[in-house]
Image (cartoon, rainbow, N blue to C red; front, side, top):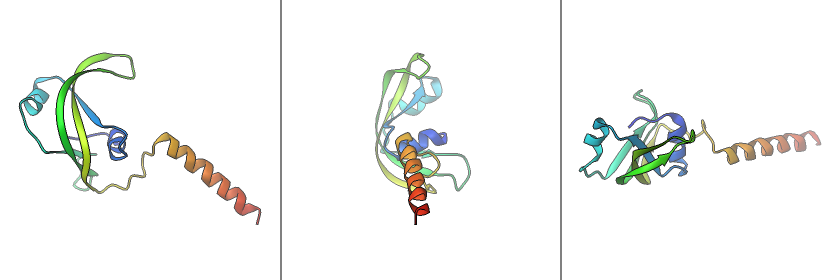
Length: 116
């Protein structure tokens, strides 16, 4: 499955434990009455695109409320542990708390260095 970088990063960091897909004939044929051990996510179509294999824990229909307030019935794909990750440096999308920590830390480090 192909994901945009934001969702790929959140799965890689362990923040996102479910992936959602619309209930449409295409996804119904791929997900219902099927057994999988692993799910493969890619961030792009290039041969060198980041890729990760994750333990597939099953799928269920779930009512999802999006950030926009819209509610819909979707397939919720439950994700387990990351089994393999390739071509990924993890530096493009940091969680907001880590971004803020790094900004503050770098600023303080520069201030301390200027006093010597």
